[in-house]
Length: 289
Ligand SMILES: [Zn+2]
Image (cartoon, rainbow, N blue to C red; front, top):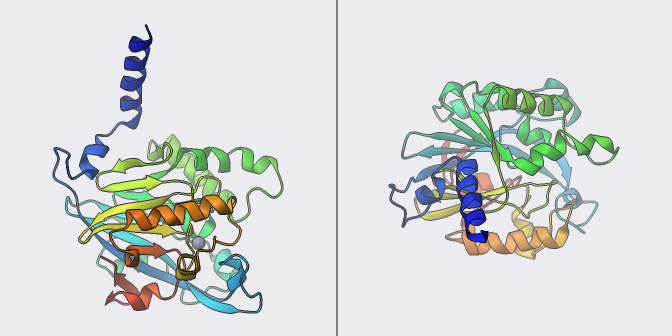
């Protein structure tokens, strides 16, 4: 009886995954491993951002200009994956005094990618500067952690202080994508929604923020997004400021070190040095791997 129950549950979970993604991501799998070219694309700059707002416990008087970026993955199978989507709303440009703002769809055009060519968008979390550009990419299927979507379209709005950095319009856009059948829900840690791309939770930058491990030329590149704001978080082993669970954030950072082929291939969410440590291939675009 018990064995039957487990067999049914396993079959059900295989169906709910809906993809043979695990075998794609594994070199041992039957499918040819997909390898991605990995790029960081800058679409604006927030000037004078507080360092203490990025690295927990840092000097409150220090400030720095931080890049706004998305990451573009060109797959060997022709897939074009955007990791995070930036934002579009003018009021946010004004509110955050964003310099050199460019719509993320125009920013990726510098790399020769048209908005219609983006097949998938994987959102690391629901903050405005990451989840606010999905409407620019009309053909893309959008992926997000199931718990992140559920929380920020539900419980987060029952309290006053539980949806900082989340734009109501972005939540509505996500609900619309779901109604259109274009939303993919990534259910928990160590999931492979797309070939060659694994998603991991535990960073706790937001309720269920995720980071990505991508099959790339040198092996595995970690796109940490805001689960690591700056290289300083990694170098000093300090959690991102405002993490919902700092020990969990640090544990995720430690885990990234074991997952990346080289620590240099862990890419933080807002470090200006990303654009100097890697070769520039177009204006505001660097190739990470
Ligand atoms: Zn951010």
